[in-house]
Length: 119
Image 1 (tube, helix red, strand yellow):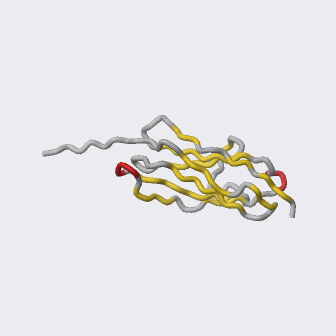
Image 2: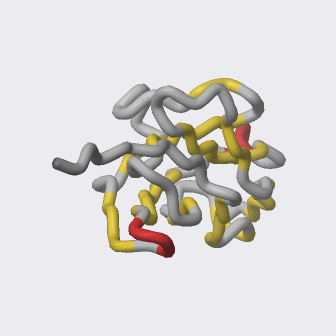
Image 3: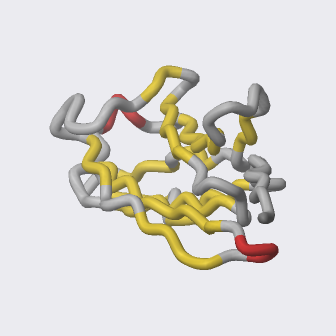
């Protein structure tokens, strides 16, 4: 009889993409994608080092978390964040992180800074 061993593996990287040049009150979409991990990573969003909670305000809307097969039988995790910027958000810095339960390490994405123009 064989015993299966489950090994947790964190993602090696997290990538954040999306428009940073935007017009006030016009939606922009940021997309966060983790590299392959096992199990699938949990993603968190931050604005200026403060966590962005789902439905926290009318300025941020989370997309659905999506997983797809990744390297080495792992899972790639992705999610979008729609930002409806107001003029006071010019220069806000966005980052997403990926974490695998049971592993202390958290991987942080590149950052995106909003550059807003008035209508």
